[in-house]
Length: 321
Image (cartoon, rainbow, N blue to C red; front, side, top):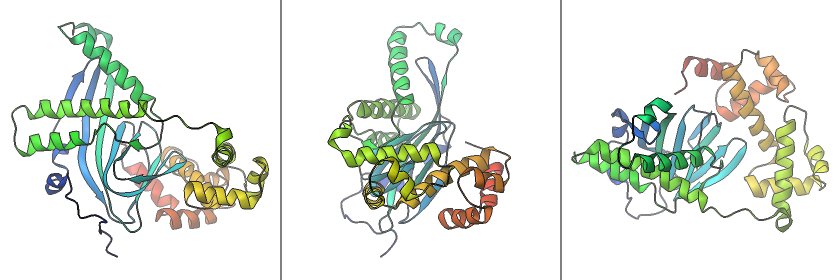
């Protein structure tokens, strides 16, 4: 099957953006919203070929992701989630994440990457004109919610992603006030995303879903003890079920095996340590539950397509955005 194949022949609403997907990235868009300064770093359309993956990484800023077409998965921190058309999620400052298109179907993404800075109080005092207080209150409420959004995808029920096309069309048609349109589009995306998370259904009580409850218990135990030589039997005993039951739960919840999940958790921590610490590869291997640096090298290369040393050199040389 062609890696770029699509399952639907419906017209693609964002076809216009495909002619120049990164056009808006080249604009220097900075503006004030209430008591905050906002700088647009990226505002574009991108495509993942079937099976393409972006390995674990993190940013120091906010990155908002929307899926207008296709399907795949994302790992936010330690948690894997399925993605499909109409979903969105946030990767806030410092959150390690991994993205991958479905093995047989490409996935498109609309991405807004912004730097948000709280302005000094003296700057706020200079802005007392008509309407400024309302704007400051609105911005403050939205940014506070943004900082507290859960690390999980939800449906874009308030159509935030449509604002990408509004901004792009303004640039494409050279409309009057294009920078104002882009500014308002960014604000609308922030407001609509936070509103969608406000309406997100609350999870059921653990007593109503024992499989999910036990999965969460196992995941928490793994997160707390990932550096130890954990086995399926050890964790199963901890959550008081059989090893076979626990393996089945992990397959249902993650689509993979128990061992794959533990490797994923350990590799996330290892990627962070390779980029941020001066510890040797041997030290990092032992501190993260690997029996030897050679075994870490084997798993790292198999899962991420590069060696630990190559990953360290690439991430040390490339400055964080």
